[in-house]
Amino acid sequence: MRWLAPLLLLSATHALAETVTSPGPDAVSVSIYRAPHRGADEAMDLDWLQGFALVTETRRVSIPAGEGAIRFEGVAGGILPESAIVTGLPEGVFEKNQDSNLLSYAALASGTLGRPVTIRRTDRATGKVTVSDAVLRSAGTGGGAIIIQSAAGFEAVSCSGLSEATLFAQVPEGLSAKPTLSVRTRSNRALTATVTLSYLAANFDWQANYVATLGEDGKSLDLFGWVTLASADETTFVNAHAMAIAGRVQRVEEENRPSAADKPYLTCWPNHTTTSGLMPPPPPAPPPPPPAPMMEMAMAAPAVGDDCDSCIVVSANRVRQEDLADLKLYRVPEPVTVAAHSQKQVALLDRKRVPVSIVYRSRVASGDAEQPEILIRARNREADGLGLPLPQGSVAIYDKAAGRDLLLGESSLDDKAIGEDVEIKVGETPNVTAETDTLDSGKDWDRYALTVSNANPWPIRFEAELTGWDGERLSGFSHKVRRKDGKWLWESTIPANGTARLDYRVNEARD
Image 1 (cartoon, rainbow, N blue to C red):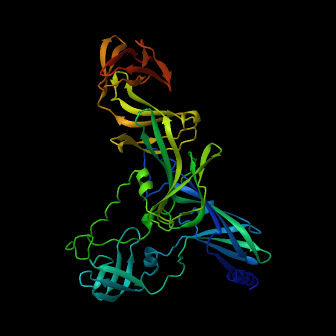
Image 2 (image 1 turned 90 degrees about the horizontal axis):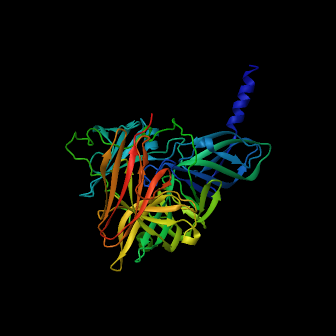
Image 3 (image 1 turned 60 degrees about the horizontal axis):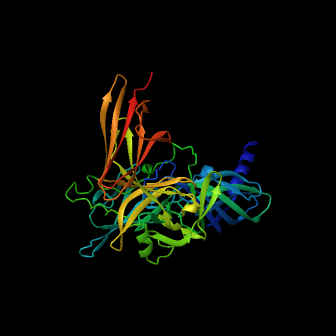
């Protein structure tokens, strides 16, 4: 009895600990980092965003005296609770918990297992509504069907072919309508404080999208760019200070996070129907329409508000570029709504008549030459019309013909620092060919001829990047070449309807 009394007192103290709920932030910033392993030529997968965000919230909360708990509602659903930092509390935090059991159909089904539910079905053809009582027998955890038992027997939910709704008598205890992070606190007195909550959250990403329009002279282009922010999270952040971070950030991947496959979801059984194959499964949802060119989207976008979760919201205000150590930060200049399951676009740049050159390039390895491709090349310098860090992203290339902008191709652009060459690949061309022929051979060497033919009625600038296989050495060039990025580079002007030739020797690698 002497040791039982302190335990009872401790239990009573925990039971009396006051819980305070903060319904949402007073101010919030969302800094979105790109998926670290997604290349410039890979579009964001809106169903599986692999970037992340740093969310910083400011809240005014009431802190109870003694031991208490604060529930931060409205945090990101993809919050990584171990990354959460709370500052501004009198004595800090001694326990954090993510209340991840959110109010959803899957959670309702899992929490109502073995309890009564009501099934309401509507015949779309006749409008007749039928209501029946049932007991939920299987919540479909791990990918199975959600099974109910009624007077008619066992059946899978949403497989009758009729419009169905499942009505639950009550919300199971512990479910929350908003993603919530709760912390336990201690304070020697009750007070109101301004606290800052910062955390990492998954299911975000961003990318740049460019539109390059060649001038009629073929020596300049107009370059317009967007920053596209994407969120696959269920939480909407209103009036957020949004930023996009360019550059690769080192992260340690967690292998034991809960998988979406662990949650129940609707599926028909058996064979997608309750009538063993007599009823065909419903047709799949139509694929989303292909994205229009970004410039056309900007011109034709309807006047939608920030509450349009499914729309791409276009803003004419440009982001401001700032340095963040070796990374680059692109700040949206005004508060915006980072809506749940949505994309948002903000102008990145708009440069007119940027000087460019058109180059035809072929890569040659030993005696094999690739089909030449067309490059649009510019210098990323202020004197040459650019002079700002360019984040990686997709590029739509247009050319003016008959008074209209016609699509030449789609390409990608890697991260480019100030002073670097900017190269946009247009694609291969049938009008310029590169072929190699063996001229002579010896014991440990071969001599080749690279012949380039130009079928265009105008001269072109051509470049060949020459390398050897597995340590082979190249020598004996018949024309001047130079080293660039570890490769031999031959540059030549090919006359209209003309040819040019380079002879060279390939020596086998030495042991």
